[in-house]
Image (cartoon, rainbow, N blue to C red; front, side, top):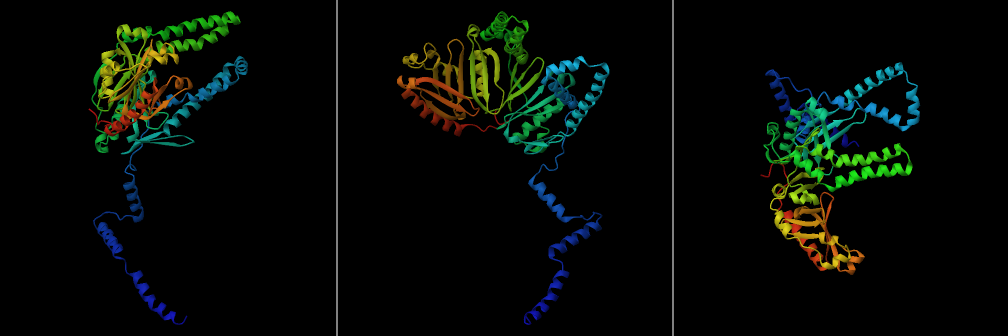
Length: 496
């Protein structure tokens, strides 16, 4: 113990000297601070905070991005929520609501409106006030919520499509809604509302940043040029709907079902209640489709095919390049004489399901060539092969409508005798291929071949010879591997 005390005493002067002498780095910082003060530059108050902020800025270059609010008319869109809640509460007990309405006086109505209208206005304003969005170099952030906060981080490299939608009310006010399709998301995130000019500018900026353009240049990129390919005339659209057997079949059912219900029940009200859903189906398949697909225009731009349509609500959609999983060419029976077809799509993570509502076959093939580069629809249709004749014992008569073909670009399967549907799947989009056999198919030595796509859909080549089905599965597996290897990158603005 006594031997250690002198050593400690000897170290005390050294420790004190070390505390008095500043470290070289600290001395340099003090000298720089003194020089800055002499030059009129204020000395940093907290050096550690400055270094932390620098680290945050290096880790997240979007930290300094300014958040923005939606258009000031947005509260009008959200103010109806309290009225909807009140209507739902009344609909919960219609009998009690009827008695309550019978006892209402003018004073009570005015008092209720005096309370409900300010509440609705306050709700719409606060929901707008607490909604912000910002664009960084890597993502779009949407922050919402008055009580429960929600922040959506939308990666720009995962964008499927950015669509501009204008409902009828929004068209009168000059505003628009921005909808975003993102890979892996079940529902679309949206920004509603922005001014029409700002919505288009933001859409162009998002697509530019998703394509890898530098953030400082993306804001000035502007809308990509569009070259119109096809415009569906309203007359052709109307005639095509009148030539669909499904429309007339729905109309017959909508008339016959209520009449039968009236005869059996003797109640007019029951018959009217029965007629409403059938009439809704007729409207959706005829007039509703005409309104939604009115003035359908397909244009080509560097960021994909642009789809513009709508009579009341105007839609501006985009078919993302390289994201199409399946193309279906639908040919109703009554359209064949005119040579018309309908082209539908399956796009992974997107709800865009129609490419052309009606068009001549040659025009449709040209547009499909933009979606599926290299695919020759006419050659594939000529190469379709029917199942063996013994397939009639499995599916009488309709077996003739099960056709199959495959070339270097697509897997093709057609089904239907009266109404035909030809499905084309690019080999690069095939996720898996399966061979299935039912008990009766095993007896007939037949099998079905299914190819599964990234849109959670499946295309079937049915009733093939069992040995042929095995060869199709093996060949399709090889084509899919080769197709994915040779496929171009699915990036915005990277395809001509």
